[in-house]
Length: 241
Image 1 (cartoon, rainbow, N blue to C red):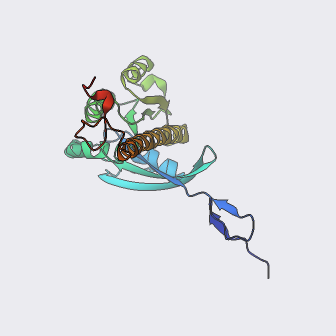
Image 2: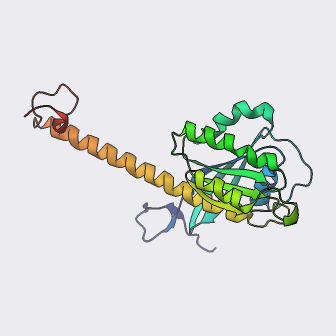
Image 3: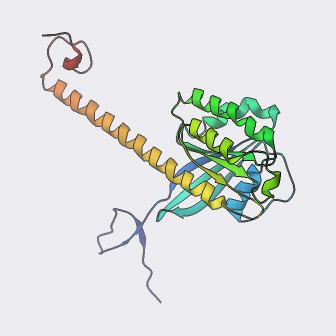
């Protein structure tokens, strides 16, 4: 009987010699937003299943899972496909809060429906307000680019202008769910941007914790100024000469 190689988590060994490391996929969240009938569900299913949805079926909230490799690292993407109907606009803020600030947003409009572009201003303003002008990364997705450009009702200049005002917008991408054009290019660069943001936030949290622990250790040695009433000394902030 052929022997089997046991795969162990990275950094672990059973003491019997070199082992193959298994990398646990990092998990990230992407939220697909925009008005109804812009193709949010079609784009999501095209990316996750390589299929095209012919029939329109209004979405309230659907979650899709995609396992893939980005930048030579395995990732697990939770993709939240949201409703675009006006009846569900009250849920928009909760969708924007999904992932606790560690999500990314694909904001979709249709190149042949002017209203879906104009109403992105409301999405933008709400996102900026919620995250105090420092929102998670976003991608502006101009969908239905397979339709003849003579029928487009939104110009490239208008799209570029919106992006310039949209903080942390990583790119504008012209897509077609029916042909699959640029669908992967819409999702995966956004995932990279989300991963970078998550790692930055984690590093910053570790640095704050290390600084706090250092101050606590210093305080425990009795090296405070002797006049602080805080849990740790803040001599630099004390008005002590």
